[in-house]
Length: 328
Image 1 (cartoon, rainbow, N blue to C red):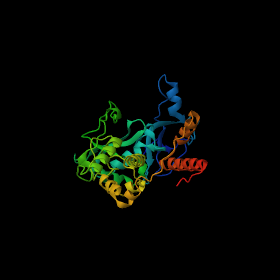
Image 2 (tube, helix red, strand yellow):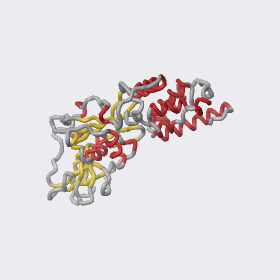
Image 3 (cartoon, one colour):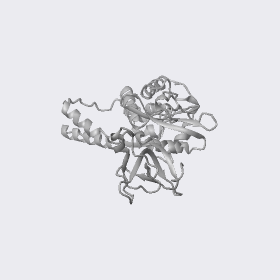
Image 4 (cartoon, rainbow, N blue to C red):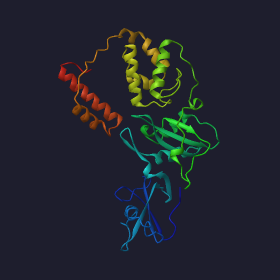
């Protein structure tokens, strides 16, 4: 919390339409009162953007200053800082305020400071990476941190990578220098289990597939796929690659139920799956024109994971109906 307004000042938490927000809802902090500046020197463009008419004032010409800070009002009247509104990102079809994630992470009793960024190790493979300074200086278990965040945030806002820092890199103005944050790396000590090497050829190949998808050096047979940085889209790619390579059909839900290489290897070797080996129907390749591709990309842009799955399911059903075949 950063406190309450001092006498002769007003603090407002507003949405994008400059409307007051209820208690607890994040918005932009706008300041009014006698201490406001007249504007930015020789910068009429900045002045017009930051100094807006005060919709709550009773004097002609009153202005509010848009601070650019993301805050929310607490029930006791104090204002709580959540970061900056210019740290809003679009992630898997969702608009996310990184400051909200940072605020929840710093509420953990063992986390003193935190920063969250969007990490993209390769085009199209985006992840949320969290950096934290622990209160005691020790490495914290990433699985426990994820569980803590899941109690207050939706799944898509939970970072997949956690990196401990001795201290946050700061800019000359004293704010976190996000460009100076190191490349996020998976720390073995932060996982819930110990490393166990592959014990047969199937596990060896499965760990290689997982390591390539997750962009990490090695994967243990009992490592949790999602603790390693996996998410629903990567899980789909993993199961599709495994199914193609081993000639078996594995339901995607099995990876969510038992997200380890060892469990997937057991499924591959199970009599039930082996009995159906080779029965996966071959999908006939259909050439699509550039206009079809552009239309599909426009449909996918901005959709959530669930919406993408529904769209692809619909497309599959339509293609099956055109060919006179069952899409099941």
